[in-house]
Image 1 (tube, rainbow, N blue to C red):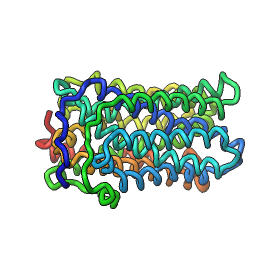
Image 2: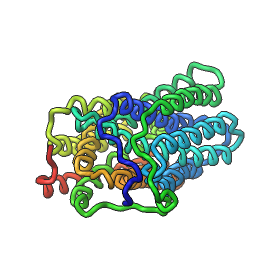
Image 3: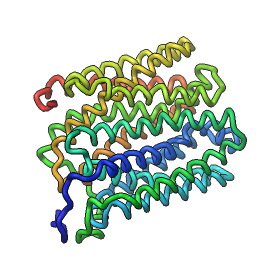
Image 4: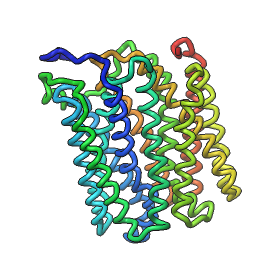
Length: 403
């Protein structure tokens, strides 16, 4: 990578910068995940099938991935703040399109624009969190990169449920409230200290570039199945979770559907703090076991139409998700060099969003042929297989897993 024209500012930045990146990232994740609990309402209004629903879901992921591949390193050249503000503006535009949505085509446009904006914010927020990581808390950026999205996803389920069940015009009001939150986020970003000054090569940085430095490849091999299991679980719950609660468990209540999403993500938020004194090896091993066993229990609770065991198993999955994701990311993040930061973060998100979307899209198309329950069981089987693969990788490469 080319050298900067001016000296890079000291790594020690005000703690305010770190928390601003984290909170803005959380707001954007709430906005990006809000459509998931609303999908049943959109299906009732516009009459689209489960297969079309997966297309609406997938177009967001595709737009995000393309953005990360092309613009993932842009903030290294033009600065963090301009790219972050551009991403926030696009997410805000998408909320307006959602608020006025009159057909499925509007949803597709909104999700595509939202994907581009969220992709920009995700990469910049993660790189910015690393820039401003408090020196006395070396693992803070790793925790923030995993806890903040989980917090946003948990909040989206509850917020959407409250709007649907308790407030008028939920498909419009929720978007205007989120639009206001994005304006506040823009004001907060304007007050951030710039941590990545101007460098040459901005246009060249738009050439898609995903790479894993040689010194990180062994750690990536251990981490990738862990990330795929975690993000695959999240994708299944966000795309099909509310539908599974309604159709399989027979609970036709948007708030309960939102609670199902929150039941996964809230334990995922608390898990890294509960396990903060554990070694990464312990966290990864227990996380993969809990996620795999919880997934099996979730399938069995569906077959028995048992809501209480379903929520218990979901919480166990969430706890496993939280410690597995945090520890596997931390194993890699601790060894990222300064000039590799944006490229590695882009690669991290590219791998994870492919894992996030693929099981959900496949399950959505299988739903039309096999029914929702059987399709979700196939997707769950994929997660269990990834958990088993993760355990094998953890066992055979445990010398690499240090903290």
